[in-house]
Length: 255
Image 1: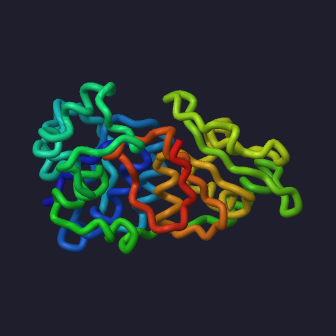
Image 2: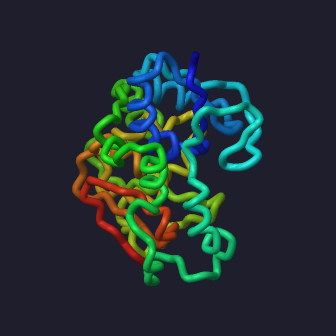
């Protein structure tokens, strides 16, 4: 019988949970992977992302979440925040006016295992290093280069700056940190049919890559993309409990 498993629906959630789910799949005949209703584009991304794990099936059936641990389809596992986590973090989640930003001291009880990524792994009994060690995605370099040269009209002679921000959620990068002397390639302004999974070549070829706290930043990190100017604008989205763990040499701008 398949194990029914749920995670949060965003791109970053699926990237972070890949290592955990891959580990679980080693001991299960099949995992049916559920999430909230998502777009067809996201569904296709997740199917492609998890295609290397033969016994993981991305379920297209939409579900309704009643709470983090109860849904319209009975799950065996919810890879979500635990009740204990909410008991401690609840006040900060309910009242954004409380001091919880990264440039303000954190509560004395807060530990690394309380951070979102660590909490998901720890609650399921797995170490966070599997996020990197278990991650695998086979890049389509032909597609990536088609986007780079043909769709975006980039070339190897003219330097450019890659920018990822999210105007819809008001996660905006302060442009004082970005040179006006080069072309900007802004992910939020690209055609919707260009997949995040096919943007790594653009990042690799950029003079600088500027990102906020986003799933694409995590994707770059777990894919071990080598780049001398990976710049993380932490102030854009800086709750202390939501900071991603990274291994690459990100240059962090606090505020």
